[in-house]
Length: 577
Image (cartoon, rainbow, N blue to C red; front, top):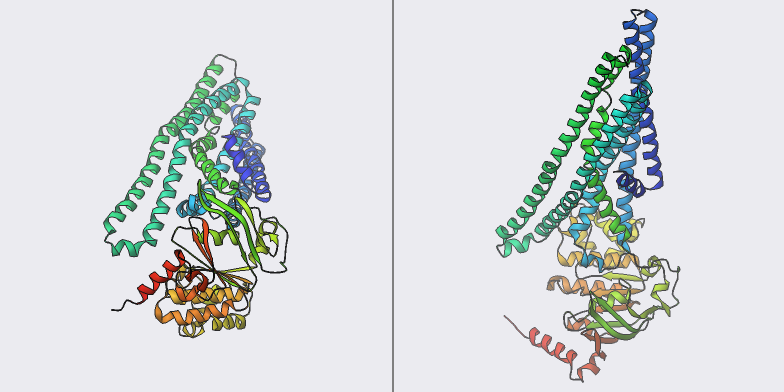
């Protein structure tokens, strides 16, 4: 229990940790004020036994009770406020820390870890900490402190009753420890089922068009329903498994209270305890474990807190790429790779590639699917780090640059464009949040998307759906090009930017790309002949190697993959309906 509490406090940042520590201190003061009820009871009981009750006695007892109630209430209110602020602040900070950490992880991390798991950690897991952890931690801490204070006070009254209390606590913690051990594995299983459920919901929603098109609704619904049922079972099983331990804890505490009553009566009958002390012990037996009983019931959730902290920390402990390089402004945008290799999960994807891309030239990368084209561009722009060799920009190894200074040199237009659930203007100015509207409109005009934006209900202030779902593929592509124009980086990476565009949008999209790439260094992955034939150099990548390189004319004279690529596309283009 105490290890879990320490791990949770270590997880919090320094400011929020201080809030929790101060909250515990206030809980201690609360416990002291709660314990003042016992002297008040003792004072009144003594007066009653001696038949010396006076107005002064009543006022003194009333005063002690008021001090107890008001003091305990004030410190409880302050402790609760601090723990609430600490809990929500911790989770907010950790969400942002995780988001920032994810930004600099190698892209391979996202292949190894499902979107559902990452989302579950940043939503469900952090919500568990937000809503459950702070309350459970503080209930347990305050329950332990209150019990400790009252135990010390009763030892002062009678050491024999104090020993009974300590023995009762020892058995209580033994039962609680067993409950915590049972809870450990079940809490992990519960959170795993939470992650699986989130992953299945995301998969079902994102793939709903394919599910309906291939009439897989029933099958996919069964998978989703199975995940829901397993999640329900994991949560129910955890509750049902822990109920006997909670009942046993509660029963034991009440049994100890009963023993205190019996022992107090027997000690008084035997003449070794005066009547006043016996009565105080009997009354106190109903107060001693009140808060500890609640703490014991909620302590089972500490394992859920522990697993949640571990899951969040697991992401934060994942090694980032080294982003701590220098702030470098390259003298040129010449890109070079010297004998680079890269493997993913023991499979070599790039095998000993060397290349040079001079500044202000266009390089097209073509080749069979799975040959390593996208991985190569990712290495050139340092989405991944090479395993062997080195990539340079302007003569300096890209690993010598800080990540942010390196990324200022690159703009990307991907085949699959992602737009955020925000206004079109904010999506365009994504890289420059403070850019004036005039600059946004200028970029949109260059990207050939100003006209269709103005036809939307709110123009540039139109809020588009998540992922740009309310726009066509060509419209999304042109907005992504406007975004790249706004960034105005010297190197443009085009990854199949025109692959899924309909013929009506293709002409405008090509004009937008021409505007984007003017006076730039261009790296493009493309399958369309018209896109690559005017490139300054063409690299043919197959099985992780560059098997051909040259211009369109020179490669057409060779018998190889490129000429087959061109011939197959010419043949496909000749088909007519």
